[in-house]
Image (cartoon, rainbow, N blue to C red; front, side):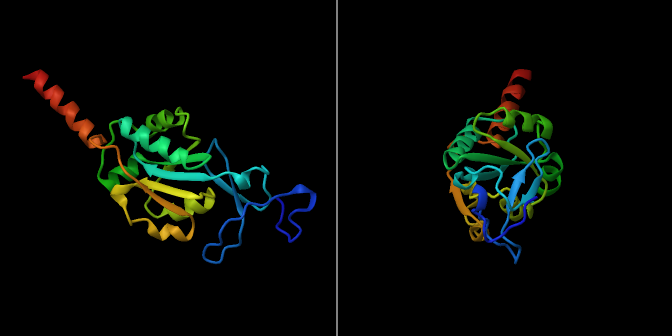
Length: 187
């Protein structure tokens, strides 16, 4: 691990500038794609990294539908890399009072198979968003407009974008449609 010095341009070494947070030194994060864990380095591994925009978004993505796909494509269009923080089954149950039809490993694999998604990490609590933005060097935080204003505190760390949802579709609507179709078929 290289240490930060004033002669950062010596020998072609470039550094990713990350905003300081609560007095932490400016540093760079590198993500281990297998584990999804972030590690801090001060030396840039990829000289092009400082020119890439990283977008991060959050969600459950149960019963993946066109609304999810539209949102993810629009997120990716805002930057060069898209990180999706996927709510774990435990987080959904305890904090959101949601029971997922598809379990976390299945939802994660589905998201990882999408061309527009570069990395999927677990969302395990509400408070991790600040840490994730710093750890993954996110330039843009994106969430649906149903959360408008709730994440403005992240503007100190990155750009915050609230995207409009696809009209007429949601996982709740989709689950209700499935229940209606099956209840009509059994009568």
